[in-house]
Amino acid sequence: MSDNAPLLNTPLNELHLELGARMVPFAGYSMPVQYPMGLMAEHHHTRSEAGLFDVSHMGQLRLVGPGAAAAFESLMPVDVIDLPVGKQRYGLLLTDEGTIIDDLMFVNRGTDIFVVVNGACKVNDIAHIQAHIGSQCQVIPMPERSLLALQGPKAVDALSRMVPGVEKGVFMTGASFAWQGADLFITRSGYTGEDGFEISVHNDHADHFARALLSQAEVKPIGLGARNSLRLEAGLCLYGNDIDTSTTPIEAGLNWAIQKVRRTGGARAGGFSGADIVLGQLDGTRALTRKRVGLIAQERVPVREHVELQNMQGAKIGEVSSGLLGPTANVPVAMGYVDVASAGLGTVVNAMVRGKAVPMTVSAMPFVPNRYYRG
Amino acid sequence: MSLKYTEEHEWILVNGDVATVGITHHAQDALGDVVFVELPEVGSSFAQKDVAGVVESVKAAADVYMPISGEITEVNEALRDDPSLANTDPLGAGWFFKVKFSDTSQVDALLDETAYTAFAASH
Image 1 (cartoon, rainbow over the protein chains, first blue to last red):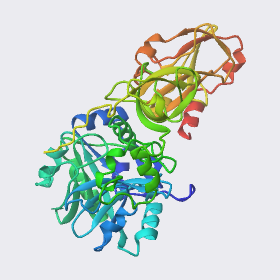
Image 2: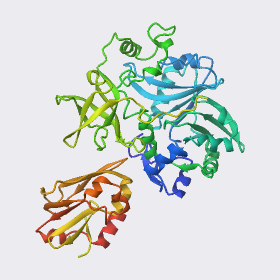
Image 3: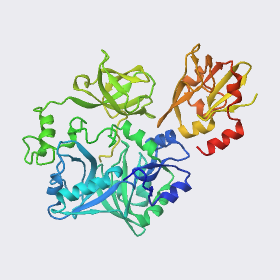
Image 4: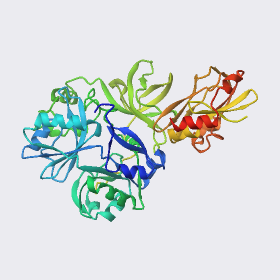
């Protein structure tokens, strides 16, 4: 999308304005960055109660046909074929160089594969998928659907009151439900590190459904600002900051996303874009020069994206890709890429903030413990 | 003497040859919850429009500019310890620093309340 194209509105735009949201351009849409409660309170509310996010800017699509799973596998280093019906999985679209075009979530719904991709990438993603596997399966964008996320420890209480049965699903599963004549596809997943749900609903019902959620005592609307601080504390990558077409999954530390069956020696090893590079970095036959790490500052100075990282000898070893003062962690947290020599847990590096060195410790992520519901 | 304002959203209150400087209500509202401030060193001198400090919320960082040329005589240590004072009392307990100045014409040229209110409404 060009920078001067008019902004699109989600079906919840009127609701956002009614709620007093501060709207900003994001991924080609006018989106709420925060509501009157403010980013900090929204962040804490999501960690303690339940927050409702409009993520309708994200791309939803379906892959249909007997060859869909095998075809989708050819684009990603993950196991699509063996994913059981009703299960959700994290995936990565890769270039021929093994770098990341986008990260996504997909569900085997039995009759199709339901895919959710990043809003800023969706036009390109759909074109990429269509160009590569459009002859092997139907690639069907779903612009008629909105996407809401309900996140937080009380999300299950609020949603199950409206949609009984959702409480039975565990983390990374999805199922169809109905609410007042609207069909919903609900996954138990999200982007905050908390228990919660993402709900796909037809645009015609999105406003009504969102208002019903907001009428639940636990639920408050949460903007993109808190969405970012929540996901960073949860150690989750933001496409465009922490991963992009200059980073591979192994550099990004996303090894867990590559199931054994697709790795060197696995039954369906390789066979995806960039496999030589990605699997080589994973099995050690190709040198890995840098890695994404978590960083915690030893001083209370926020360390933001693009801040240079140096070793104790003053040599540049990398750069911060995302960083802020974590509202729950209550310390400045960041992710960045560093030379592998500096990537070990406990290594101290210097972040150069306005010319001054702020020591940061390479730390395990998440910065705040995940609280997914695994049954 | 009444408050004066800059187009960079600082306020300044003159008392003799020393002026107190902070960020405006509009500025703190735009930033959101302030979590960090960097204050200048007492005794350091700045020219008008130099960057003298930094104010950061969770989502953004902004520079604090010198409304007038002068020497820093005092900084708000309470604000350093509790940056949220910039949100809760931006024109009072959330002040940033005090500056000793000599060029009163710089003060006279700053925005008055009416002019700043109009400016802020359009920015």
